[in-house]
Length: 118
Image 1 (cartoon, rainbow, N blue to C red):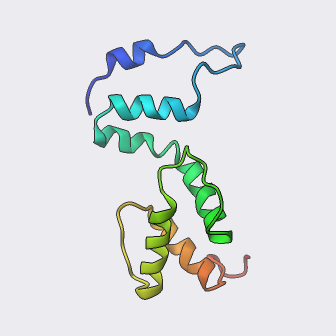
Image 2: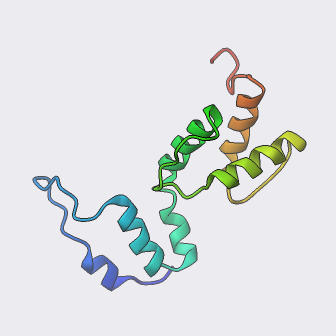
């Protein structure tokens, strides 16, 4: 992990009484993309995983849905993943978290992830 003294020093002070962000999450992600090593940026993407999760749900319901740009996984990547999962259920891809594979298979087969729960 590299040292990012200038990046951290340049972040605004966070105060409870300040509610307005000076940059959007998308702009902040771009700043981090430009300034972090790839390995370090992969950790940052975990904070943005919520948007990928939302995009996955929207994609499964409607493949033509509009994606939240704050997510990191594209519609094309989801299409490829689903195509591969339909061909081979034990498909592995490091671009996606493991729970995506389980969830997509359960969703496509209309089976609950946890027995007894919908």
